[in-house]
Length: 319
Image 1: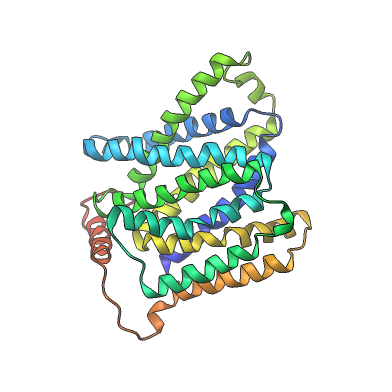
Image 2 (image 1 turned 120 degrees about the horizontal axis):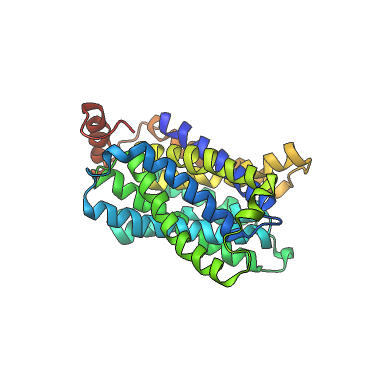
């Protein structure tokens, strides 16, 4: 149950992060907000794991920096613009479609099909998400399209993280570091282009004059890029990627609950039903071992166990 607990912790933090990003970038360029956030957290990761950098194979560097970094950049760049054109709750609802995209990417890359209990959970989650699509909203908005592109990067990062952990036996900290540093490289290129076209450049003077923006960046560094990222990667070492994507479908329920507690906006009947169904989908996955039905052992289950035991023997860093 440790894997479920840590992933749910990451879900809670991610649910808060979209509200923070929207509030912290009211008067500050969105791209530069992400640039400074990732630049700062990259320095922390490199200082933390510099002793193990030479032990990382060249292929892992390439996959981590270029592919996982690109997936994280896609999520980061599109999500922060998406929350400016729609509500944070709507963004996390669209993010919930990873429940369908992750199994598709798993089938394309690894020829892995969902198990029966996962198919049931996916079906329940899709019904829950459908409850949140209100035809009276007037169709898709610009922010919805941006959130959809970010969700694709989100789903791809889950699949790539699973491959690095199991196939390449990379540690949790190293996977997190590679994804963050790779994302920083892409944001650096985007930041240089932006700074060359704008009179404020990298906006450093503007940044230090806005305590709210600085607080938002600090929150994103400590709680999202460090805490939530490490929790998610650690959880993926314990759980299959499809299970992780199902757990992340709880984000709309978390955001709606925070909206009620912090802002006093009660959830609608649709949101209440959605939250109930998403909890049911999570229970289907979490309690699959209590059904008593025999299940085939996936090859990756053995890889997951060997990866954890390898860490205990000292073959890779403990995290």
